[in-house]
Image (tube, rainbow, N blue to C red; front, top):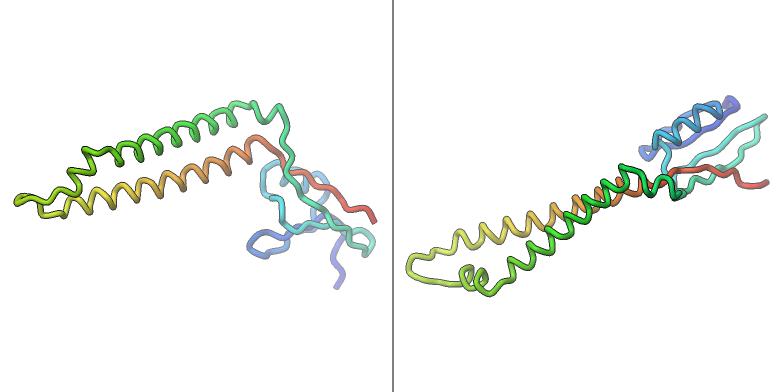
Length: 148
């Protein structure tokens, strides 16, 4: 069975979407449903033409309100992360953590260290998520058809 003419792309889950007309394909690009690295192609009269999806950064999108907002969020999280590491490494806190006395059972030491490492890991994850959002808001995905 032959597929109909139009644009097709394969989602990250492996599902093929199409046939789409040119306008619908471009709308999905603008919405962010198409990502660089996804397989996309156009079929016409039984011939297949591969499409290359790439990310393009433009000045207008780099300085948009959402891009500046994501940049500010990343900056604040980085400052908070540096301050957290600085505070955790202060000699007074280290002395309190590793001080073993008669009233010190050590349970809260481990709890504080676990909280520190969880906070550190989640902050790194949040920074990674915001960098992805910044990339999406400051660029657009464009498609180019490979020459035959």
